[in-house]
Image 1 (cartoon, rainbow, N blue to C red):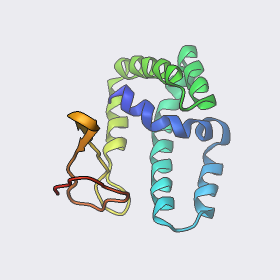
Image 2: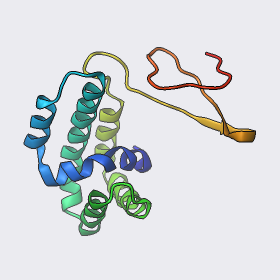
Image 3: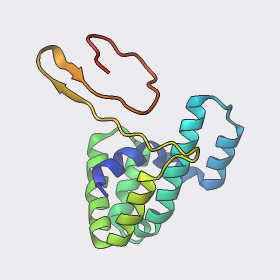
Image 4: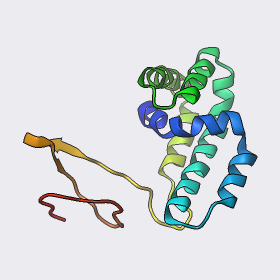
Length: 150
């Protein structure tokens, strides 16, 4: 399991995961409407909670990891806090390969409706930051401009 990917995924959810608790998260998801964005958010919350349930005991046992999580929870977009958390997650995952494998399986799990997980790869090359990408087997939400070949 790549600590950078794990950190990037968990960072926006950490404030809720460590401050609000699972019951509040479930209640918030249950009260929300049935829009596509809500369903995606609910799935992401479920995945983040499953990962946090496995990771939390290891974080609590290591003071430096606990501090890094608290820093990211206070400022999820802070690059320095995320870097410190990446280092701590790397140490935790290297020390427990079984945990790393379990988290990797959660990250790769299919969505509850049977659709495969989302993977986005973006390459920026050339002048004027041209974006080159490929999308297969799914629906694209958003705007695509410029010369596009699908």
